[in-house]
Image (cartoon, rainbow, N blue to C red; front, side, top):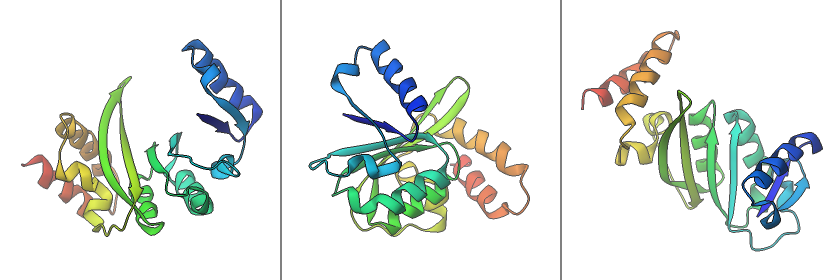
Length: 169
């Protein structure tokens, strides 16, 4: 695996974590900006981007989509998840799976995407096309949490209605 981060200091944290789990010898570590870590590396099968905001993930995808060479993507954004889904659609990727996990009291949405044409509605971009098709066990809990967050934000009445429609199912 290739493990990269934008700074040597951040990369050192990843190296320490992988060493703790006895995986460091299976990794090639490099300091790189976004998907530039893939430059000159043929046959990359999967790229993983997690632990960043959705705007940053979307920018990395737009800037580096030419380096993906058809690699599958595993993504988890802390914010702006609909933007990430929209960016995937724009760069020619389709979401093939989505999962919701809960860790330390927080919900995380993970998605897998592969090259393909997709056309998502605004509702699908917001709630997740794969989550809507196959609601996971944590779906209702996640929606209740999202309802509480969205109810505090002005101008999101349509999104709140979508959440409440799903909760009523």
